[in-house]
Length: 328
Image (cartoon, rainbow, N blue to C red; front, side, top):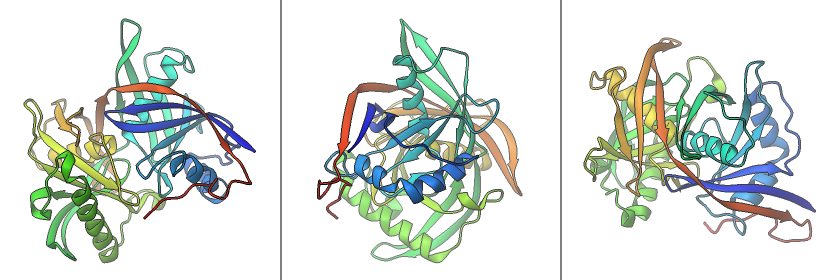
């Protein structure tokens, strides 16, 4: 019998199930090596926690662990319905919030976090003893190129390929024939996955510095904002048809990189993005940098998370669906 204890949380509506006890040791010197080890040896625990009957098709998780660098404060792996991701912005915000509010971290000015995509630095803002917001400086983010692809059932689609800790294809929602309201949820999944499969089938993606990051994580559909004081609405379809309820932290990182590359966003200027629920992240460009041959930026993204509870999960070897399932 495997028993796993978690803290349950969400950031702007997107869940984060944080493993605090019961996960086996994850071997590897770097976080990317640990990601590979967990994929090979612990995937049955990922499916047990993310999928039914303990989770659902849109569940997201995190495994905090020892840092992989001498000056790191902690390391983290992120997991979802398809596998282990390379970086997760809403996950950083929720993880720091939950660990601080449960006294798993000592309060300090900033936290150096080792992720599969690289070093992320987060800072929390306290008011009246609560974590009111977390902002993180992400890995180098950049617009890689602009291209077009034929998408079955949709037609010719123009997209911008950008990296913000993971690769996304950014597409205008109207050109894809979908709205971005709550009731458009199923149509968004269908369009997003059609586009994702088409892009993956049409090209090979190569990260300029790390081959392990060279794959398309998701599609971000964008439209004009629904709310005043907001620049854009983003809805991300990632993994195996998962929809991010939040504006997507890595997605906002890639978005501010695009806006800066197009000359529409200055360093230090806030760029507010809302998700499908209307909840917001604020991104900005901290500084310019390089990622291999690409002009890149260091983005910062701020949002808020809430702790919703604690749980104990049991994985019984006699349970016929104990390692999880999804109804496709």
